[in-house]
Length: 547
Ligand code: N01
Image 1 (tube, rainbow, N blue to C red):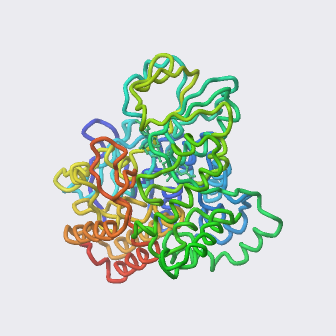
Image 2 (image 1 turned 90 degrees about the vertical axis):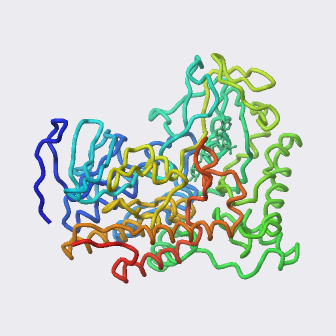
Image 3 (image 1 turned 90 degrees about the horizontal axis):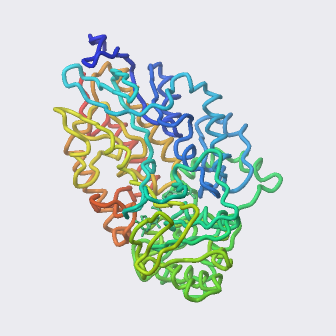
């Protein structure tokens, strides 16, 4: 379709016309760019960072690794790429993943269409022109037929909701914005706030370097041992010989990680048999973070079944941590295991046996403020040379609601999502035509191997765009009815599990004022893919296509 556009925007900036704007150059944005270019579209990617990699560009904290095995946490779209890239160990480090992201960017010559160090400030639908107007913080204005949000599920980091951070006289570091050159904590007294995945990975590494480390814990987490190791000779070659079948199993699995389906409920096994299963999930050097929860069919639906695994992990914590009071404080007791993201650790619990590591249980003595010299709880002031904030993210919706996104008649996405995200398939939103979200809320996203979900979304979205182009259509847009029924389906599936009983970032409970809604889709990666494929096969059922 051709259209007449003013060459100068109302602000005086020259308007550039492209077929598609993609926001974000992490694994989603990079693959989106590659696909759309292959389809002959002109594409502009904007990225806030000065390099590709998204989450792996920013999260450079000590000990940062993926909790999905390297050979699964990689693209499968090009057999040559997956055969030529060599991973070195079970769980890849952040530098290794970032090297891989850069390799992909070079291999497919992606950088020429990525503009770095640029924040997209707004994307506004022009009802008359039927195009998106995209504005950046550099004053650029683009007119695009399609906008794809590939801005990540965990990209807007949060600091603790207590006063005083600006008054701290030493340096502070957020795990999600770690300095590129690293930080040397040698000889320092360090305080860390938070005990989620980022903290659980960084605490053992910081503890080994700092003179003294104090961990401020509000909620303990369940963590399973990583058993990370370098690949034995021949392992990688063997995996690569079977990559196509392995990848296919991942695509049709529940979590994007192949796993034999559980056959019975936890309470159907006798205690000894159950223990053997849990022991295997705990000790097996090739274990994954899903093994424990995937041992039985009802782990995430039946509290009593769930309790058996939760107690198994608490027993391990009590076994490892020598000081009984510390061990007890580290034992999660007030939410079912798996309803907050399970962490994967290397020496996390063991670290509390070091003389230079101290745990402060904020349930007993809450944080009051950050002071010039350190941190004050209701009990005492702790003095530090440096502070680490591992306090998480405004997950899933944060990157989208913090941008000015306006659809038909100026409707703001933030307003539309006032009571929680609303989407069709987690991909599209009613009244926001020609706009797609990669791994958005209400898709499996954070409950899956992200690479599997990213590839599925990117391929589905680029196919939808191709359909629009080939049929000479102007717009594709989710209907309000399709959106409503997907929102209801999400809630129904979510509410049939134990997930809503936990205060987790899945529920938005970690951000003050955020609606408490279970955001990811828990119906499973395989079934979700089938539903998406069915929608496409029925000429995009639930969408209005206007020609
Ligand atoms: O963040 P989190 P994260 N006072 O939200 C605490 C992925 N990831 O960066 O639970 C005191 O989990 C907060 O306490 P509480 C993975 O999906 C993956 O660690 O709210 N404490 C919590 O302990 C993960 O789930 C990998 O009570 C405060 C912590 O800060 C997700 O990213 C590695 C506080 C935040 O934990 C997020 O992980 C890292 C306050 N005011 C991350 N505010 C791997 O692949 C917050 N907290 C391995």
